Length: 369
Image (cartoon, rainbow, N blue to C red; front, top):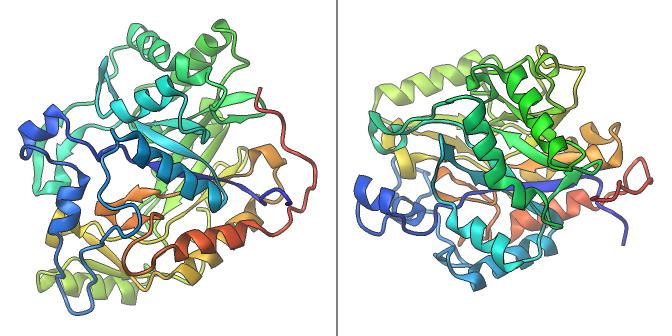
């Protein structure tokens, strides 16, 4: 079997098990399933709730559930999961599923970490002014503690590497007090620990047609940026429809585009701009009528976006062709590859088919270590 045309990496949300913080903030036993199952249609043609069909409403503290996820992902061309990782000045949250994956050695699906360096508020739950956990940056000692906490993962043979360097993804690089100093410090710590360095990827978000939130990746020393944008029309006519929907108490309703959003013209072209594909979007399970809904998403259209992303990645060396998928299991945002009652495995099958085309560069990827 030929190698995939790109390295498909799916973001993985660990909020599918109870934690004391969610019990206190929301209700006992709260998980992402709580919002997902309570969702209801808010306008004609609105499809809610999304129902997990094949895997059910799993608990991520169950090793069998994690194995089932990995089996399904591997069978459809996903190289590995990128686990959202939470660090708040020494405080970790939602860490147990990944810690158990690391300690047990199972499943054997490759993985990487993405630092979700953003304050937790109640914005998606109707309480935008409620601060749950504030993201702070105390300085070098905290960076050292943070690095030491994830070093066992970086050394795990399953950890995803690019040109031999472990991949670390930063969600909000623009919120770092000094991104260049962050990069310098973390690369230094990695090398001092005997690693060849890190492959640092910064997220560059463009939200609903706005300007990119971060454009200085090259100057700050990041190795690449991941361009994350919802595939929606933001023409004046489309935005007028959105405003009209808001006036009558509906969510902001956008329509899915046929093509993958282009990288912004302000993108840092001297580092690779890696595409991110999104199977769908509807965060009304979290935010109700304040949410954003993308209509018209289909597995076929998602497959087209994957093919376009693969074409964009083709000029890069094989090891650097990272294709991010948002997401494996963001059920309360309506972006998930896991099978649901409407589409079943069709998004996964579309991904696998789009990845199966031969690469322009037949050279094998570099070894992981």
